[in-house]
Image (tube, rainbow, N blue to C red; front, side, top):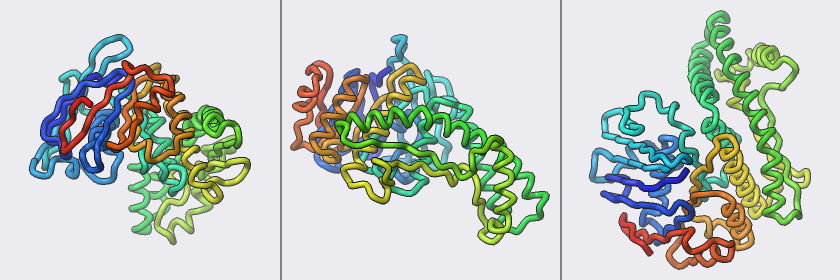
Amino acid sequence: MFLKKIRLENYRNYESIELEFNSRGNLLFGKNGQGKTNLLEAIYYMSVFRSFRKGTSSDIVKWDSDDFQIAGFFDTKNKIERCIEIRWKRGEAKRVYFDNDNVERLAELIGNFPIVILSPESIEITQGMPAERRRFLDLLISQEDKRYLDDLTSYRKVLKQRNILLFSDPDRTTLDIWSEKLVEYGVRLQEKRAEVLGQLSGTVSRMYSRISHGNEELFVKYRPSVDPADDLKRSFEEDLVESSGEERRKKTTLVGPHRDEIRFFIDGRDARKYGSQGQHKSILMALKSAEIIYLKEEKGVDPVILLDDLFAMLDQKRIMAFLGILKEHDQFFITANAGLNPEVLLSEAGFKKTEFSQYQVEGGRITDR
């Protein structure tokens, strides 16, 4: 599967563009602030219907407009062209169309066109707060398991309502009703997270060894909020009872998947505490490589890979290691500042000139380079 063509109207600094892509590599050159990342954001938006940046859809629309449109045309593994179109207008609900049919539940489309992004902000996955790692894992699983996405949405709604109740000092019976639903969805989320991380951890370790040339060993550890005992449901219920007094004092839910943690250990040492900047970048590359492999195995197609400012993020050694990994997959997009020559590195990594196209991005306009 690959993105064949995109059309944007009033999206960020793009007034109106239509662009066709290479089925393998696509290099986007330009100075900062010209729209390279905006294009990657639009591609990402078509997959999960939100930006990887902070903000809302009202921040995306071109500054002098009240609406924007994105249309993407994908070639599937069966050589069938599929179209996703997104229309947003100020003051109205976002509308999404799949092959010209209106889509009522966006969750039904998430995962149809899987995507992986590596950007400067991605380093927060390894260095940032636990919420960043949970967000990474939730998006990964949601792209391959629609029930997980439904459970996650329901869990968040229950958690929000339960926290509102805790703030108003509810009676025990009312709180127990919401606690029961919290356990129901929370157990399924934790079980699925444990299952996926069990699959993912070996791949992450293998990719890290490849990137670091076997000099270090990386281990991924899942630390759920609820002890995964023989009976997870009972353990969850008991933890809620034990924490009830503190929850009422703090007026928030203290137990559940929303407090899970994922940790990375290099040669037995906690990377968040002791890891160097270079080690964190290698962890991130290994994690993203494992994400690509996992989605390909589970979905049966390669995800579209977005690499924002890759050559500024990494040294040449890590770049060459990652390009070697890319060689094993399909379509990718790389942004780079005008003075860099990533096409040389792609050639050194074994890519033929016909396997990647080059574009110049300047002031919301994109031309062949």
